[in-house]
Length: 256
Length: 307
Image (cartoon, rainbow over all chains, first blue to last red; front, side, top):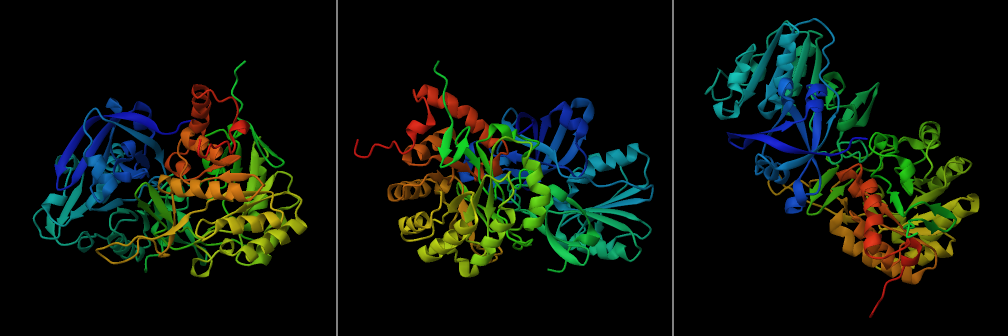
């Protein structure tokens, strides 16, 4: 029965502007992990009184090297501790956990990412290209500093957008949504995902979004990470870690 | 020869070791099946069950605090019918003491839940949740009042032949009075403590970190307070005590047992690591060996004051 596993950090990348990547080696994980999945990662030795593990989405996967990447932005105490770790340090991880972005049809796919919401679409782009799917990635941030993975993404059909126009198109990602896509994946701020959903629901596209909520256990025991989800004509508080993090946008209660 | 004996007793309940998974931190059980073998655990208490399904509170429901966490889940739950049909059968295959945490908004509702599940053979005991701070109006819970505590336990005892464990709140002035009220109403044991009422506020937005405003504090931060309350209660009642509050190591378990607990519940530690309880059980044997302790039963309440 697999629980938390201790892995050594093979490599650390500092992207600047509070963005970091940790690369971890584990052949089995790199083979089974799917875009949308996440891991719970424990903070070493209760640093700064932080006791809870933190959820990290999978970023890139390098199967041939048995390597995978966790990409994150420092947003609080936990991510700050992780940002100070270095190559050779050990971290404990549980997973992969959660569901994935579903690729069920041969329809054209669009992925819309805002800021650190790029994570799941890095590996997904590679998979879609391998499977010869027709897809477009739109990736936006406030300014050029928020746009990472430029060279990796140059291999894929990517539209970059920044609010100040310092890289790619000027504006919001939601200003550049093209029609004609019937499978839509999105990850980023709620307000962006909501707009993406509203834009595509008119053309009866299927929209899937990866939701973020404070998480404590990642295993389904604590019911801490619940989001309000429509079920029939009612709403339920649903655990993001168990039934998500990817949800059909139609079920998400946005207006709050 | 020198095999360590971890077995313990809580009234008529015989446990293979003193570690029970606490209500609300281990789901209904099935969530943890991929991480541990329940046959190795002393006991398990389900998530709190109301008669009807409950939606629970809005998010955010949790927030990390120094060496602990705040939660206000609001007893989201599936209600007694689904519990009986879906959860109890799951427990048939495991040999461990199994308890149901019983919740209610009124005295009547507590009784209805017990009534509904009383004939379920797999249920070994009812832990009466007199103390959830997140659901009752103004954060009030019945275990803030000795009379209410007495009355709920008495009504339940009238209709139940099963072991009745009263779970107490630490958010009271004299916990001894509440414990005595439960004992007078013929509770078979007392479990304590539930979470401490707490809150946290985002200084930028000025919005409380928990949607419910108040939450319950758990985790290592509350351990010294919980231990003191276990000690006080153990000195004021004769029925067995199940201690809990921030236990995260085998050392912590022994500390509670020596202070007066016949068994312990592990809560937040399971949230941090689904296998925490199993790891503690393994370590407990080694720890006892190194301290020359032979069995748990001899250590219960064996505290030396002024010694």
